[in-house]
Image 1 (cartoon, rainbow, N blue to C red):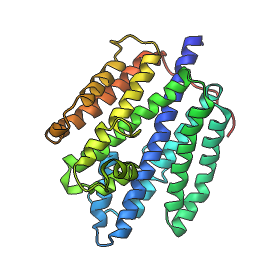
Image 2 (cartoon, rainbow, N blue to C red):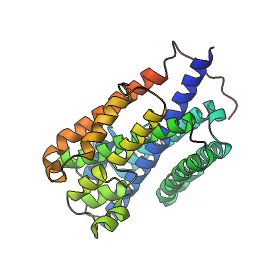
Image 3 (cartoon, rainbow, N blue to C red):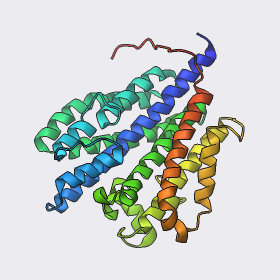
Length: 311
């Protein structure tokens, strides 16, 4: 096996580690926001709220009435699906284990200990509610990325982790807004959407109040300073791709750069009229960039299996 293949597999593992941890974090935030909103408003239609959750994460809800326990079983506790929290963290752990030499020991220990703690937290969630489980996921995801920032050199390994996180972050932000804008039947209200994005306090500091208007979309898409905004995440992804030393016409960087420029100079007054098409273009750009990243950086031929160490 040649060195370039080994490096491409490590780069792929690092990118997906970043994506899966970010996906688990965002899914946990979304579930937590919906659960708290349902507690505050017990008259809210549980079936509609659950269908809204499924719509955000692209999961088919089926025709039968949906309840929150089914949502948690499918979107939080399912270890076989990377669309769920547990499955995503399990996939992140496997990818991180495949790239142990490229990440710090503290990052690996964070993911490994989190994975082994999930079983106890899952059992506790069935007795006392899922809030401790979701809090563990959010805090450990923050710890993982904090350790990446504080214990990794700013080399290509770090850039692939951050690139994966940034692409996933844009995708999840777009999914939240798309349900609110494009699917009125299942739409969450603006405060729930802010809370699910971890943006309620940051929004309040900027606008002097809590979100109850379409200005939430402007904040989550165009704010230059909030790290979970689409503009900030796109800028970070573009910086990572640029630092990896690829040409300007690189198929991975080009769609990200176009969307970042479009958001950078978008007239906020025209945002509402352009929002549906803008969200579709953002999601398509992230998919195109992800394909470009795989084509450019992971060009191995045929399947390559890693000899995994023991659990």
